Every structure is written in C-alpha cells, then in structure tokens.
Length: 336
Image (cartoon, rainbow, N blue to C red; front, side, top):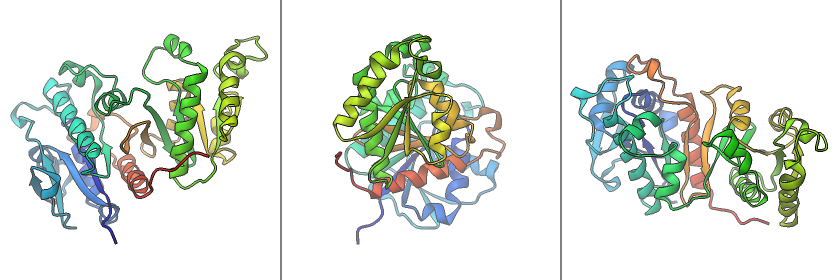
C-alpha cells in the first residue's frame, strides 16, 4: 500500500495568523493523520508563534521534502530561513513578509509541479505586502497561474454543500461584465464539472447564475443572459455536462446549498463570494481550478487584528487540509 500523499502547507504572511493557525491545526492528531504534512515556511517564525498559541510541538527543520521524518510527534518544516524576526512586527504590512509569503507559495507550487508533494494548502497572504515586495499579483490565483503557466485558472469556494466557481474574480465590476462570454463560461463549467467529480459526485448537476437581476427579465434589465450565458450552457450540454440556467443570482446559491445542484457558476467575484461567506468564513475552503497541481486554501485573509494573540481560528485551514487530502487521493477524471 502506497503512503498517503505529502501535503505542503505554506506559512502565509509571517506577520499574520498563518503560523498560529498551522500550529493549532497540526496540534490535532486527527488532522496530521490526513496525510504526510510538510510546512513550507520559516522555522524560527513558526517556533516563535508557539509563544502565542501555547503549543509545545517539536519542529524538524529540513532543506528538502526528502529530509522530512513524518513522525506523528514532530512537525516537519521546509525551512526557507527568509524572515528576520528582529524586524518583523506581527499585524503590520511588511515588504519582507510579503516576499517571504511569495517564496513559500512559489516553492510549494514548484515542488508540486515536480511531483515531490501531492498537494499544496496555502495560508493567507497579504496583497498589499505582496505588491510592496515587488510581486504584482492579485493574490494566490494570479501567482499560481504564472508559476504553473495556467492563465485560465479560476477559484472554487467550498462550504458545506455549496460549491461555487467564478467566471472572473479580481477585476473591476466593469471588467467582469466584459468577461461574461461563452468561451470563458464554458471553460469554467468544464473545470467545475471535473472538480466536483473528483470530490466523489459522478455526474454533477451544475447551475449557472445570470448576470443581471432576474436574469435580465426578458431583456428588460440586460441581454447578457440571452447573448452569452445561455449559448455557453447549450454548448456544455452538447458536450455531455448536466448544466442548467441561467438562474437568478439571488436564489441559485441557496438552491445549490439545499442540494438541488452540486455546483454553481457565478459570473463575478462578489456574486459567488458573498453567498459562500455568509455560511461563515472560518468554514469555507478556496480551491484553484485549472492548475496542473492541487491547491486548496483558507477562505479568509491574514487576520492582522488577531495576529500575535493566539486567537487565530484554524477551522478553515483544517477544512482546506481535508479537501486537499481527498483531491490528492483521487486521480483526475475524464469528462463524459
């Protein structure tokens, strides 16, 4: 029997709560048992965070994944040694912290691309810190899309039975409207179908949200549904996907949560994010689709307010680790 996959967990912005929630999550034996856990970060920062969390975990700093022990009583840390603790202020935007967070994600992604880890789970980074360090990305999705050379990547939010993907994410609302086009909608439908199948649903029922109020009300409030969204759904159905809509955006996510659909496609960032985060930001997971690697993430930010207090909430991270382990254990599926 082959060993469970290695799950690489990035430290996130070292000035945020990432180090603390990782310690809290991996202090639980049942979480460590989900796979072979490897933290990608800075061992000194992680050790200092134990003064906030009260944990007394042994750390094994390694220079490569192959040096990890995966001992149940030890946390293995791929130590990049890239944080000067004397100049790190928790809860504050810092170019040093932004650069460190960038290096954690890039390193973990490259390990996954090389097949040296089975999945990556990312703690939150701070976009202001990332850009202050000279890394001009809209967040994890753009960064991973570049590292993995996958420009069509998108995000899926998972919270309980709600699984939401997005036609566009970190762009202005004006730009988002321009991106509602059949080819992009079809691509997101295909990615959603494949991802939900990997989660164990053989023939996913996919709902597509409209862009305008009441899906345009027959053209009274807009015609994007008729011109762009409905044709994409028809193309998806012709390819064998069980897609339907467009459905009004004010009800489709509730219907999905109730089990009528297995996944829903939102037209823009806030349309899908508000629906998922109303269930509680500590319960949701962000999954990047369209990458050649498996990546899940917490659904919340760096939580600077609680950084250094020990009050960081690990629940979203735990759910992200669980989902990464499930995806890593299930091979990619073929569309109908």
